[in-house]
Length: 497
Image 1 (cartoon, rainbow, N blue to C red):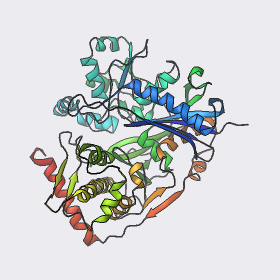
Image 2 (image 1 turned 90 degrees about the vertical axis):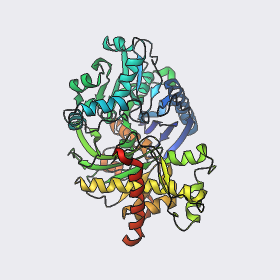
Image 3 (image 1 turned 30 degrees about the vertical axis):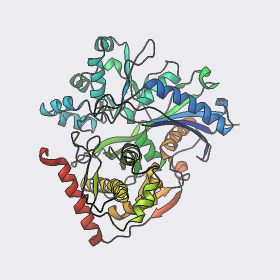
Image 4 (image 1 turned 120 degrees about the horizontal axis):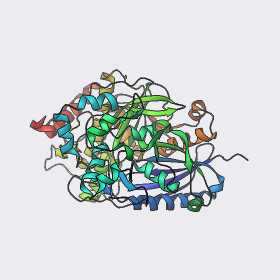
């Protein structure tokens, strides 16, 4: 019988999950493990790659056991991952030379300022579709080469390998046989020309990253290699890789130009499918490959918000306002309005459309009448307000306003948030019956490469809606909320902007 099950390793910012999908794209086995976050200095965020590898392997084994399957039953493995997080390791030993530097990390900000002052932003933007920002991988790589003894010389000799998390996991899964990545992860480094679709030698020199370190770049649905049989009990093809946000777009079946999704996890990321046209943003959005199949690239406009669920986590773990994230729904519903309280969650700077790495989080409008419910509501409202800013920027760029916004990620389970979001963007919000769309997107890619699914039309039939939230707010009621938000952002950006 043909094998039809796909195992996906979904490696995120705070946890690693493995999920087994069947031929109907239903989850039949899942395992998850949280891992430690390291904050050596303010603005620095690191992960231990060995923690990630240990959890990826353990959850893969546990998900298989939960599904009642073995590795021999799998058609393929897919990988989806936190993007921009950089790992550098020794090709001979496979050992990382430093902790992974996470996408949230801001230590590259001084170098980014130098590049901007030197007039490099137009070059970077034209070739990569990105803005110069420490969010992306290149300055993280250069920092490691400059701060780990002997690393730069080793990299220039070809002794070191760079990868985003997908590439590191692929290397380990294949026993060091394959050093590769996909176009979506490669495009987030500030080193990849998204038009010529190759590593750019001039950008590598500018950002001081030796080309010898870089992985091969393939389509998303591609037979990358096979796993070491000792790891899972059988050799399994690794056949699909995509960065988490592009994977979610694919998992949401947003295959036609004009379709959009927004993912609400640690951060918030909205992608609008623009087809085979790489739309150049005039409003500080990113132009990014959404996926490449059979050598043909579909592009997207992307708005990246650094903090969404992380603000709720801060309310819980940082100041103890709540004990569980799900409480925010009840607290937000309990009060009639926001009491003039606005949170600008710039804990790691502000992303699109402002791109201010120096901004820091702030709460405005506090009075003695404000309480825990107002803080919880402000955190949720900030997610919707930031999404509204992205929708408007995309429309201004010529991408158009989406007729419907499909949402996913853990925060999308919050009914109050979805309803408020629909009101703020004045657009219906669709929530799928399975919020694990990131992992599903990686499964779709792996399944396309191995014949589990026949094509995009087949995949579209597997998506289904759980609920649609229709906008229910008048323009007159919306206007003061929007004005309050924009005033708060203006205060946060301050005189520096």
